[in-house]
Length: 636
Image (cartoon, rainbow, N blue to C red; front, side, top):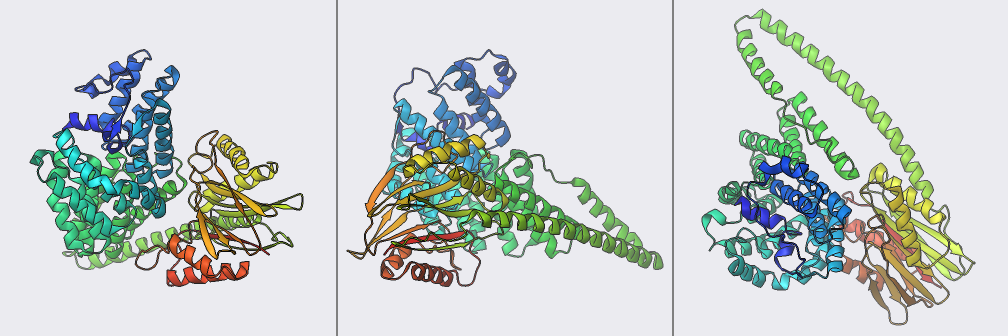
């Protein structure tokens, strides 16, 4: 089984490689190496060569889905040698695998998207043709929460997923019986929070692998089914699928899958109010998450332990896991220092102390007045400790609030104080942050009194980190001359890349409005909507591309459209069309398209007001999880 996994994982993007048609590279990548971990010291002592890069790559693959940090270490050592020797054939394999580890194990979706995009370009440069070139990129968007981009890529895969899964089963059996394309589609839907579709495709995957030998069956569809039913609050059904698949999951021995199964079971038992079983499986998943550096499981387990201990009024234990989960969430938002929590372990001394306290409590029952004194004294001590913690926490909260207020003031100063006063244009804007400091941004620049540049952007995540990216973008735009929209993005991309803010990225589009036309270029932003008054129709203009700060010297496309009396341009961030209602359903781009078309005869401000009123009604009073920004320009 280990041998087959080593072959599978070391293919770029796992499933994606199964359906590729590659030119022969002249290097044998398919050599099966037994006991490669036993040769680690010999491999590291080898002189730099293509063989050393190959062995390091295989060594990284042997740890995959079990020990994230070791996997990343050996892949990056392999990459370093490959770049030094110009070993181009292995680079897309290394980068595809790095992307997969960052996505599944480290929950660093920005890095995953970067490496998978890089691998795709490297494959294209090598002339490697893949049946599904965007497969891993689709998964990255799914885990990043971009439902619209995920769905568009899935539409290319779904029509052939079932047939290809059966074909793969017959062709590669038994090596490939523990995967299927249709099962991976189910996984993508689950990551995109579309549970019904996740259940549908995962059940199809189980049908396909029923004919496989018991010891080769893929256990992951059971995990997806468990997660999907957990999200639907059908705890017993979720638990039944986890138990059905557990023997296959344990047999395959991937710590990532085992930990996910345990944390799903823990949440099911919590929903069923069986706290003992919930604690048991949560501790199992937490231990595995820490050992394998699996961030998602560490976060979910620590959050669940906080809930359980809070209900049981165990203040110290609940506070401990609240601290762990809060620190990890901050780390994942900023996507810096991803190794900060890899060495977190359960403090067994606390459990031993709790046992000792129970023993002392039995003894206190015998000694009467002494019992009362000890309990009273302990309560007084605990109260003092609690008050001290509250005081420290209040001081820290005050400090953070001051910092956030300063960051919020800085962000607001980045936005235009007044809108452009143009006799030919009616302009209205709207911005609402989901946190104290948002990552959305809009701006205007006039040129020669006849042309207007309109900019709309969305930085990675929220909070202070995204505010930094907005500041860099504003400063960069101020230093760039009035050029074509795509040239501005190219120059700004190099500025952001040179500053190097880690995995922070900036999605941005630029509209250059001229007398009777406009030009548009975009870097990873949602569509721009163009209402044509003459036809009373709206065109959705989507330009695909990476956000700023991704690849150096990235090329950005440019489009030109007519802009006549009554025409409207709508720029926006994805916070509005992807706003969820109480059922988790998206507001949707289609609903936005229809509403713009319906209100095309109104003024720019009236259009903004109608869109915000509509999305607020859709939110049904709940807080929007993402920033919302609108820029509406109407030709008078």
